[in-house]
Image 1 (tube, rainbow, N blue to C red):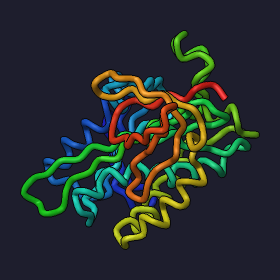
Image 2: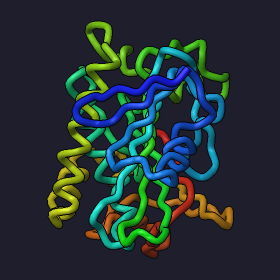
Image 3: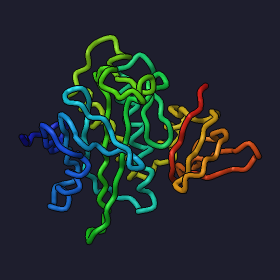
Amino acid sequence: MVRNTQLSGHPLILLAETVSTNSDALELSRGGAPSGTVVIARSQTGGRGRLGKTWLSPADSGLYFSMLMRPSLDPADLPKITLAAGVALCRAVSRFSHSGPMIKWPNDLLVDGKKCGGILTESEFGKDPQPLVVLGIGLNVSTPPAAFPEELQGKVTSLEAHSRKPICRTTLLQGILSAIDTIMARMEAGDFAGILEEWRSFDATVGRRLTWVTTGRQAITGVSLGPDNEGRLHIKDDLGRIHEVLSGDIRLQSA
């Protein structure tokens, strides 16, 4: 079942079930779908996360959506969209949670120290001078603890577990879309410095011990120094060496 409508000025494509809304949005963009189009599904069978991970997407208990963008940004600035989206997500979610949301660099939304949401940004370059960007967001809204596999028990949470009342997913989605629109306008106006300053107020890693598993599977343990002015994370290891993180897996150690 596919249904087309609009929400907060965005063309909205609603799917009962799909493999991945990011894949759907990429395919739609190649067919000329307009910037701002949002694909949302009740459930995903192959939701994608960063570094090839999967995103659990049970029906009717979360938000699983992707927004198609063609931002007026230099290609080198596209990775910053993930950080900007994190700020937008924290802004929107904070209205519904009595526990302040935080971000584990670069893309995990934490509530009360547990993972509640994630961001996956993918880009393509074609004949159009503006790059194509798909911003995907998965958010556990009312997912019951029993729905998560055993290895995730105690590590993940849902937004309603930190809310004083049930959450309307449509209202939450409207708030997130509005926050994304606002933050992307600031990005295109050249205000990443201001966005990064706000991001730092949500930083769940700064000053914490963590282990960075590089793409080559090397493990480096140290203390997070937070992101630099370009949004790249820096870690100081136990020998005092500073490492710049461009990719790989960040694992927080117990506080």
